[in-house]
Image (cartoon, rainbow, N blue to C red; front, top):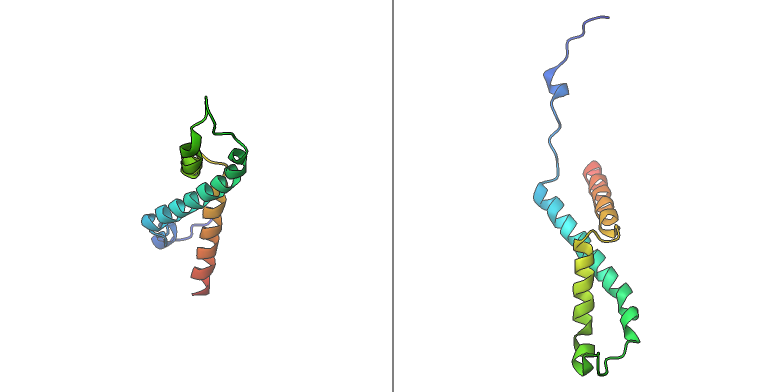
Length: 103
């Protein structure tokens, strides 16, 4: 085995080009997208439900149903979601890498 001198700059870790704040913002955007997607997917599940007595909430329930669906979608994403946010973040990172290589 021969001894080769190793430049210390070669073994130093690379400086990350993306700031943690940018990654957090990308994650938040992806999770908001997933929540919107899930809300749109859940909406038809509730369209045929009756809101009449004795167990329904009446007119108020149908009025506020979209807010309930949105809250359920956000809670689903908070609990782990369906994986859509992870895929969106991965695509955002790929797009960012391509832009950095082109620059």
